[in-house]
Length: 285
Image 1 (tube, rainbow, N blue to C red):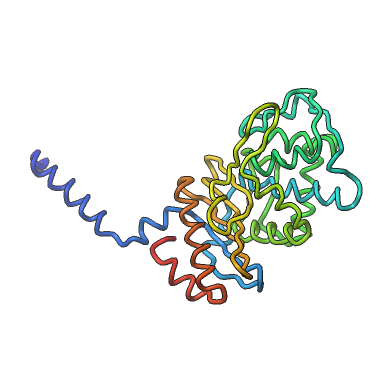
Image 2: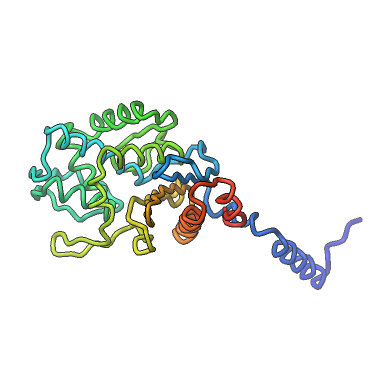
């Protein structure tokens, strides 16, 4: 016949469990800070760090990097101008993060690019996609075509916003591929991604990228949904070294930013040595 532990016995079990958890190595807890990460030295093309680079994770608002890429391709080809005025269709307001567009308001392409980069405006992404392709579904075809051209073999976009959609997926490696190609094709895009705030409709909208202000950090884009966790693509330059970091599936904004910041510091200390970077990242991710 079994006996339930006494009250003191139960507290002893709890105490032993707590002590066991406290005795775990730092890496056991760190592994839950983010699910995947990639860092590339853009100055020489060397991959300095990878952690679960091919893990399938919803992109969330990192999707808007591709949306902006397609828009800026159109501008580069002369098929669209930054000064082009767009009338906002009421269906552009889809919830989530927003630059507070008003139905039937006229806004320029430049304003919409700013709203996507800084405030992660879903309404901005919808408005510009509807203008270019008639509807967001047609625009998404352009996004997926571009992804295939870039070799993003594990990425499928379902909308231009990154809002939850069945089958929408990517990886940290694919996001690094996207960001690298985007900055190579459109280096002037950093004028949007480096902004810490902007004024629109009488309001000041702050950047979702909470890492702007860290020495050297000059972009790029954040994202979050329940399914994806906290994602970020971040770029940084110190001296002649330029780094690109992707962190996906962060358990919190603070955890995501801590991992990204740690990678940046490790990358600048050892810009040519993946072994040294990995050594410095022990206990962090």
